[in-house]
Amino acid sequence: MNNQPLIRLKAITKRFKGVIANDAVDFDLYPGEVHTLLGENGAGKSTLMHILSGLVQPDSGSIEIRGESVNIRSPYDSLRHGIGMVYQHFALVPNLTVIENIILGFEEGLILNRKRTESVLKQIFKEFELSLPLDEKISNLSVGERQRVEIAKALFHRSDVLILDEPTSVLTPIESEELFNTVFSMRRMGKAVVFITHKLKETIGISDRISILKLGKKVAEMSGEDLRQVGEEEGYRRIFDVMFDNTQLPKDTTTIKRSSEEMPILELDQVVCLGNFGEMRLKKLSLKLNKGEIFGIAGVDGNGQKELAEILAGQRKVVSGRLILDGNDITHEEGAGTRTDLGISYITDDRMQEGCALSMSVAENSILRLFKRPPFSRRKIMNKANINRHAEALIREFDIKVSGPDVDVGTLSGGNIQKILLARELSLHPKVLVCNKPTQGLDAKTTRYVKDRLQQESVRGTAVLFISSDLDELLSCSDRIGVLYDGELLDIVNRCDANRENIGKLMLGIRQ
Image 1 (spheres, rainbow, N blue to C red):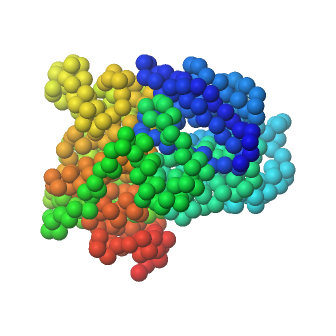
Image 2 (cartoon, rainbow, N blue to C red):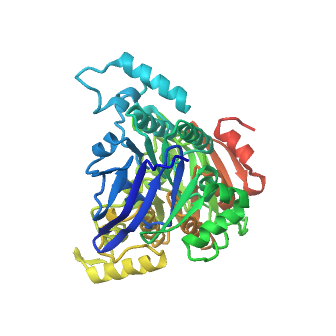
Image 3 (tube, rainbow, N blue to C red):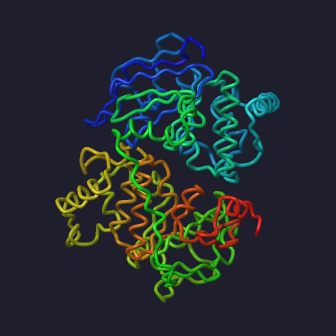
């Protein structure tokens, strides 16, 4: 490892409305290394990297780049210093092409120098094992391809440091492997990579060093090589002991066998729906969801999972076919509020834009589905005391890291926002719970907690539709797994017959 750090953060401190997000944190980064940031939700990982990327200004502390003190006051400053960041929610323009997005805002003059840009990008693609269709619009790309555009954009602008925030949370296993190959190529070329993740397996597999944050403080630094040598399980234990004060990883209860009795509560009969541009997204899809079961939906992102969830949540129209809930045809009873009243709750995968109102408080978000009902309102007058009591109960039950119910949701970590969304929907005690990637962005302890809550909901009799791109998660949680490919349900596999190989083949469109 090079003796001179490329980046050095010293005693970085940042407060938000009385909450210390970073408390005198030291962090350094060397050329040719992968340095992973670990910590439970709200530990301060994203805040620290937002400071380095220019999105947030520290209250105190200093930043050095190549030994020189610098002030990073904007993302442009960060890019100028050779620091690129790929966020969980990509900052791309859907109606522009790949090459237009890469060059956007940085090409000198008024005319795109197409030949020069293509030449530079081809060299980058070769060096870093990337492949992208330059003339394709972003809206037509898969999630993995969009992420590669963000990486290519950073490399095109000569970034020596790449910050990846939960990069595999939106990827399939195959896309994750492609990302790791790119990261290893960057390391070989002397680039430095900061990897923010909650996944312990990939942390141990990819990291040179691991820094662990807890309640805003840096509490440990570990060697990735040392953890690989002691083995996966021991490595997990050492990390978990630091992150959660030597507590045991909660026992996974999601494999508890439930009654196999078939008691259909929700049926989709030959359902067809269209996408945002009029294309067919679900093609005569039929399935039955039983009371008290967890039905997993696997598939590469973009094969109809989002549309399936939105059909059930009342956010997208059925072109043909029927939806039957408890024996009643609800096909044309549309709208999210109507479906909530009927007993269908929906946990969206887009927690930031769709799931929560970021400018509203935790308390207000907790009753978004219930604000017209007593005891939260009476004769159109809101009862703030009852709303706050409801929110405080959810904060305690779901261990949401927040100073109080009046805090704006937009100031919280992504994991805590996800817990608010989960708490709100489960508090409705639905007949059917539709979950699209409900553990995305959550730490190991909270992920286990969420899976246990879904298990408890199913034992209570709730039918859970569990959409995930994490095969291991689906295999551990689901009673049955259906695989979507190009809008069709290729097959439904029972838990006892499901494995990574047969589900993986179906995800690629290979029928058994």
